[in-house]
Amino acid sequence: EMGWSLDFSPNLFCELAYEGFNPTSIEVACDNDLMVQVLTPCFESERNVLECLRTHVSKKVRKRAKHYSITVDAAYDDVVLGCIMQHGEGWLYRGERWVLRQLRKCGYTGPKDIMFAIHSFELWDEQGDLVAGDLGYTLGGVYVSQTGFHKDGTCGTGEVQLVLTSALLCRLGHLWFDLGQARNYKAALGAETLGRTAWLERFLAVRDRPCCLASDRVAGSELLKELLAAIAAYQEENGLVSPKTVPHCQKPKAAELTQSELLEARRPPAIETPDAMAPALVSSQDKSGLPVVEETRGCDEDAARVEVAGRLEEGACWAGALSSAIRAEHGAAQSLEDEEEEEACKVQ
Image (tube, rainbow, N blue to C red; front, side, top):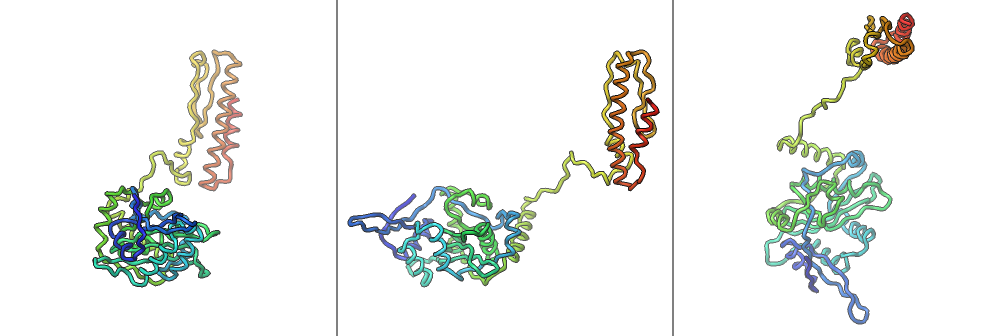
């Protein structure tokens, strides 16, 4: 996965990147306590790629994007400094920084036909402060993100910066960009994890495709609106939007029901009567639909009283719920609960 070289030639850096390597650097100790910087081109076994039209835009990003704007190549040195302050030098040692700066000024000057350029993306808040950024390079029609940062104390700016970077790349004609090593937070943005062979096939298909990466400052809300519209069109074109359906278990609201439908919907469940009491309790319904006990002959009187009391209590509770629903729908002033209770008293 990783090689090494003491040659920090800018052209070698470009040629390694052109073949799919990610040229980074390390420091190793040698004699006399000296530290030697070594170029370490690596080729990960898995890499994350994000298709611009498959970017996941969270609700938080939709709310926050309007407070930011994004630029390209407006504050390269500040982005490099922000990355070092957040992550330490890591692979961005002095030798690597020198190579990047030379390539930023002169580009590739070797014998091959390589379209290579160093770039930075900057995210600015409403006060004009740099709050997040990304550092990488383009090879033909693909942008390769090497590292990024977000300012301490800011909330969600890293995610906003990546989404707006995707939106700006989409505007400029890029189909996807490389996010490097596979990470969970990248997958949450919609990034796909590709193995080495699959990634290389996709990379080789675009590395010689000319594409521009230049833009003035763009408002986050403007870019996000464009991206969401492009995503919606892409999903519709490819049949990725499923028709909206109402769950079969969803019930209509009370205000949409008629009085008879409310009555039926709120009717209490039937009470199963033991066989021994079947000839004793014969129930019917009055005009309001409440159960009315017509006779209790032929059974134990105590059991009958318990059964009648239970039915009446259940009927009273049901009447209260029914009256509340009907009053809410029709604005009736008279309480149906009182009527049901009076009817229950007559039965007793």
